[in-house]
Image (cartoon, rainbow, N blue to C red; front, top):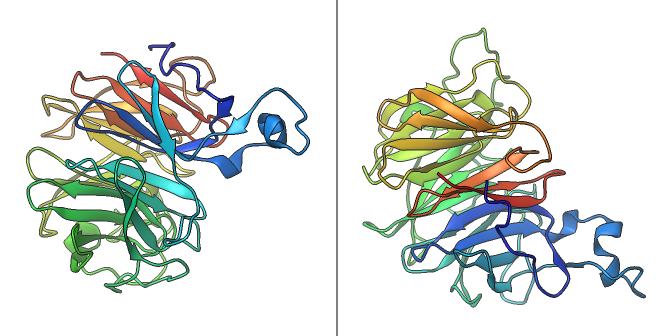
Length: 330
């Protein structure tokens, strides 16, 4: 662990639950956190009158350079767009644009900004609650990514609302296609309760929690509630799957994924067992893991997302009581 990364935040800032993390093409690390999750004693300097010297909630989007210095911070509710009630996912695309998602029951929108925080567009709308085959509205979208080859926006939709992957044109927001587990058309029926001793579920759980596109052009999706990663071609054709820590209950074992720079390995954030699994990307065979429950450096308390830079450093973010970012050096 690089325990000195990131450096102390300026302006007496403090972060709440860090729900999203991304690395851009410059190896700058971006986080999305939830200022509303800070307790009163954590933001005493923001009270009126102030009750303590520290702290003040930081803006929800923060960019760090590779050394851990804050480059800029911005975001939050404003006129012209619907900021999510519960911040969730962040992605910085190959052009440097920043995409934000939210996962509260009221959140049905994706927001795009320039890297300096200028609003570009919104896809979907708040309080939409579109069903699994609604092509215009999202419901609790958990994660987003943009394919640089096709400029298509992939959305893991969602976190307790819809249960699908949906694809849009990243320039216009026009609908392209969508699919459920095994590439099948999703339905709006209740997701079966996960049973480690039962048959494999034919549908996604109520936590389609991540979506990432590999250098191989395949789409990797976290079906968190079913403890599995499913892999698809970009048209939604199912390729293969892997179950991670089969007997895991609670919120499941597959919160997020990212790839090693050489594309040999797949890292999987496990927010129940509080570790990062290391898989051989091609076979999805589990090779090992690091981390574990705890509050010390190298341990996790509700690891939620991860991202890998060009040097192989793994950055992790934590929600619940974690409220932090850590850097794991290869």
